[in-house]
Amino acid sequence: MTNPVFQNSPYFGENRKGGRTPAGYPTYPGYAPGSGTTYAQPQQGYAQPQQGYAQPQQGYGRPQQGYGRPGGVEDLERAYGGPAAAPADTGRMTYDDVIVKTGLVLGVIVVAAAFNWVVMGANPLLTFGGAIVGLVLGLVNAFKKEPSKALILAYAAAEGLFLGGISAVFGAMYEGIVLQAVLGTTATFVAALFLYKSGTVRVTPKLTRFVLIALVGYALFSLVNVVLMVTGASDDAWGLRTGVEIMGIPLGVFLGIFAVGLAALSLIMDFDAIKRGVDAGVPARFAWSAAFGLAVTLVWLYIEFLRLLAILRGSD
Image (cartoon, rainbow, N blue to C red; front, top):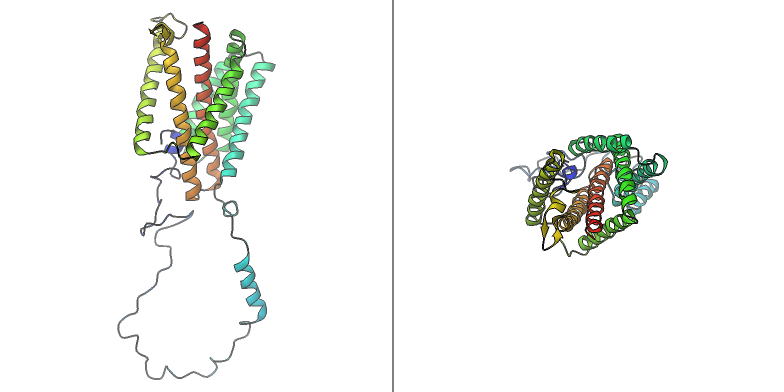
């Protein structure tokens, strides 16, 4: 998987630690090697009845007090016939946990974005401050082995302030662009989920390598482009994205479509990592890690849509 949120967790993915027992069976939460029940093999010479032990001994043939009473049998039957413990009852992560936690994280992002946009009027300090704090907290949360609810929600608040600020700026420049970006992000999320659930797109080692290489290449291009814009080597609004054209179409259009597709594949890989975590019975607290990973990918997807639509509007 390429999302560092899942890649650095010992509980998600195929290579998680202690994923299987020595016999090849999946482990369960709290499993420790050697803790299972072992059965001894009969030793030579002990199978023959020994003299004096075959006779019934006095007092051992009578039923003992407390055993065989109807109440004990009823308790056993009640326990046997009762419903099996659900994953939530055993402290394991479920899909419902991931959905609820993801909803909370996205809700904080939306509220913070609305606060900066509507209440604060896209305050530059909150916008750039949110970008810096969001970047730092994003890296911290991505490389933490154990999830932190407070840090994840703090990341959501900071990222929301940043998104609210830039959305207000783009919305003032291009009418309706924010709604288009939101719809595009939502449609891509639904499409990625459908393709994964239907089995149309499967996460394979080859796909993982492709996405990883593509992400590294795209990140390097974006870094070079930012340097060219900051140093003044490129005076176009989007640097090389609009300064270079292919058959009269800005390079940024092709890159934007490519980035959206890359983000969609990242979503599919996130879904697969979450499924592996649920199947492995990871602790319920890691639902926060799953929610954070999905939020990071969705924020990236929204920004890519916003930039792609801006480039398309600007080239009209």
